[in-house]
Length: 205
Image (cartoon, rainbow, N blue to C red; front, side, top):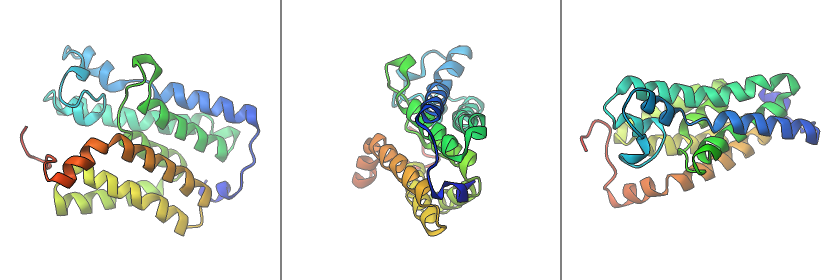
């Protein structure tokens, strides 16, 4: 699929349909839905106030956090797969807008997650091999530094570069935009990393 994205051949109506499907799927706040269904209240009232898997983990329910991570990733993949028959460009647009929908979900005041899971999900739907690259970089950085946020930030920086090297310039450009947006959503984490106050993997509190 990556090779098909070297040039853009998509009409405006198809692009709009792909964007709408992607956004609506991406905006489903699974972290909030799952924690409420489990009787754990509103996940936005604890920790960072985020609806993503990391904050769901602060409820103490690891299985719920894992389910949130999986569903947040798969909603982006599903968006790409659903519109895939309309072309590779449509799939990429759907994945991108699923990412945007997760970050800015209309259902809960446009206050969503930070986008790591949906970033991975978009890769799974568009360029599956890149998920392995993301995982390898994440694990390497996590093993070295013990910082989950830094691992994700570095992995998201590597992906567009790797795609560019492979010759998928258009995909690389879109993923680079997603990286920049996610970096902005991670600004608090970046600030804590710079000050040395970011919580390490396995640390309490």
